[in-house]
Length: 80
Image (cartoon, rainbow, N blue to C red; front, top):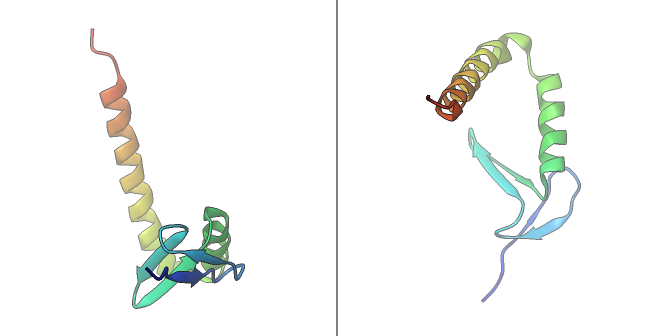
């Protein structure tokens, strides 16, 4: 059985299928061999992204994550 290999777009390392991080969005496939490479990529991506384009998506994401955190805290709270 032939194994499929990918190449990390940040560091150039090759890694087998089942390892690493592979994301597809807007018709673009991104291959990262580790979370460190993914973080490096997204940090650079956010720095280059136009503020107006990012503002709405960032606000929605922050709101969604805060709601999920509050829900987890509420479930974890002991009921006496």
